[in-house]
Length: 441
Image (cartoon, rainbow, N blue to C red; front, side, top):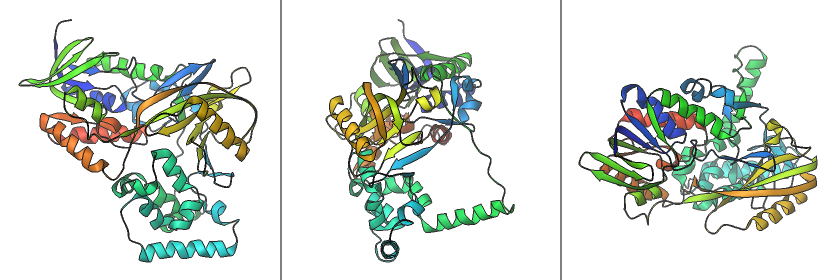
C-alpha cells in the first residue's frame, strides 16, 4: 500500500482517541485513527462464552454521558441497568460501598466507637505525614477504621501492593472518594442537604439513568462511534499491526501492516512503554501497569447478595470485584453469569488458582449456594497504572521526552493516569487538546 499523508494521526481508538478525533475533525482535513485491536473501544472489551456475554470489569454509562452528544444514536447500543454496589467486609458481611459509618460503627460496642473517634482525632491533630495513600486515608478515618473496614486490604488487592507503597500525590488526585465518604465534614454536609431536601428548602438533584453496552458487545457501540467519525471525514484503520513510529523533518511516520502513514501532528493514547518502544527508545524506566485477569463464571442456585457490583474488602481472596452481567442482560437457560477481576503485578496466577480461591472466599462469606462453573478467562495488559513512589518521576521523564519530539499524550494509557470513568476520560482529553500541542502532555 502506498504511503498516506494526514494532518493528524491518532494512535489508539479508545475513548480518549475517539474524543480527540471528534474534537479535531471540524478543523482537520485529513485525520487517521490507527488501532491495533480488531475493534475500537480500547480496554472496553467484551466476550461471549457459553452463550453468556461478559465484560472486562464494571463498565457503565450514564444519561449525562458526553458520548450521547458526540455520537448521536449510540444509546441504541445500550441496555438499561438498575445500578447497585456493595462490598464484602472483613467480617463476611455485605455492606454499602465504599464505607458504611452506621454499619462499621453502629453495631460495635461504645468502647470501640470511642477508640475510633480518638484515633481519628489523633491523626487529625498529630499525624501529618504525607508520604503514601495510607497516610491520606488515615487522615480521614484513622488507622483503626482504615484496617478494620477492609480498605487497606482492598487497596492492596486493587493496586497490587500495599497502601504504604502507593504515592501520596496519586491518592490526593484519585482517592477523593475517601474524603467524601469517610470525612466528618462531608458527611455532616450531606445530612444538612438531605434535611433541606426533605423540607423543600433545597432542590433535589435530577436522578441519572444507568446503562451498559447491549448484548452484542462493545463492538456495537464503538462501531457506531467509528461510523460517526468516518461520516465526518476520519479514516480508521483497525487491526493495523503498528511496527514503528519515527520522527521526521516533516512530522511523523507510522509504519503498520496496513501501510505507512505520515502526519505533521501525532497524538498517542498508547501505553507509555509501547509508544516508547515503537520509537526505538529505551523503555526500561517506563512506569509499570498491572494486568487484569477476568474470570467468567455462570451460577445456578441461591445468590445471597443483591448488588450488581460487589467489591472484596475481606482480608483474603485474590479477586477484587464481581459484576453480575445477567442482572441486565438476563439469565441464560436459568444460569446467572458474572465476571470476577483479579489485578496482577508480575507473574499471572493460573486460572485454576483463581477459581479455587474464589470458591473458597465466597463460600466462607456465604455469598453463593449452588452450582458454580468457570467458563473461561482472559487477560488485559496495561489495566491500571501502578502508582508507586517512583511512578510520578518516571511518568514525567517519559512524557517530557515525548513532548520534546512533538508527540501529544492523552488518556489513561497515553498519559499514565488512573481515569475512573468515560465521562472523565472525555473531559480530560478535551482539556488537554485545548492546551495545545506543545504542552498537552
